[in-house]
Length: 209
Length: 209
Image 1 (spheres, rainbow over the protein chains, first blue to last red):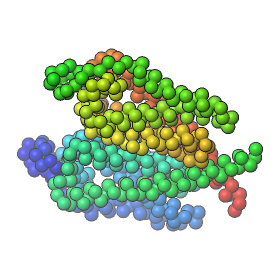
Image 2 (cartoon, one colour):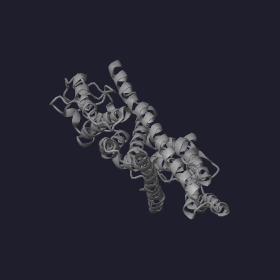
Image 3 (cartoon, chains in turn green, orange):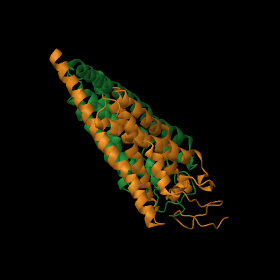
Image 4 (cartoon, rainbow over the protein chains, first blue to last red):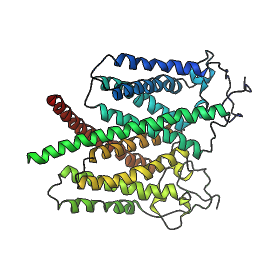
């Protein structure tokens, strides 16, 4: 089994017991299409603005990704040996299979904190909680930090993790780009919302003096 | 020079050109005692509460640490060769000298973002800016994430970075503990401040309907 070819880079990495898997990207996409149900269900509420409904979809999607996909990786160290073609094994970065310390750390923090906090954000937006903005801001900042550590360590280690194929390169950069653009937009929005709430309170205090 | 003994763990790590340094911890402490000047200067303002003055001292201290100490590490890869006894070379973690990817990444993010944002926080508190809480919250969260990555990667790599001496162990755990406890307290305080500001604004909106 030692010499079994695998899709990870570097190709000379030994993964004893590796079993190839056959799950298509279609399955990955359709599993998370489930989060679009949130859109339909939230449409019933008249209180929720379109932007809030969109945000709920995002938090459901990212929360499920963190908890299921990344949780499976962190807590199943031998996932690449899984004989039941599991979508996780489609990940192209060899650092996942090699259990690189920085990758495991970032994924661990993401699963334990950001995964659950994302799902909490869905409920917080739906019920209009006052901590909704600061919660969304926290999770977005954590996602940005995690993505930065993920790519910077890859760069510093000279690890061309997506060198195995063009498909992997496009898929990996593309998939991770979402966790740069969307959290940035959400963080800016929350910053502005919080800024104006604190500003209004400050003006009120000045008046009352 | 190859066999020159050095204080870093593991002791068999080769650091060609390493020059021992003689700077005492006293110097490290007194350099950052400068931030206590902020306490004296801020005492002149009647507008600033004691808690705000304390926070300004912390942000000046942590900001200078990030920018000077950590900045020197990130942008001077061969710092351990420095013949002018520089306090940075007193750092006990071999991962600094070995330029471990996770350590360089965390320090890089800390210097570029958190260092400057900490110094901005001093000014934001002094001038009572509305973004003061959200800024302090962001930096604290970044510090907590960085410390988590720093210790978790050390643990996962089985790198007993402080194994060289008891002094290093106490110094390193002790010094890093400040960046767990203080950012946690600040983050909780800011969360509460922001929560109540948003809550007040929410109640106002409900009334005006």
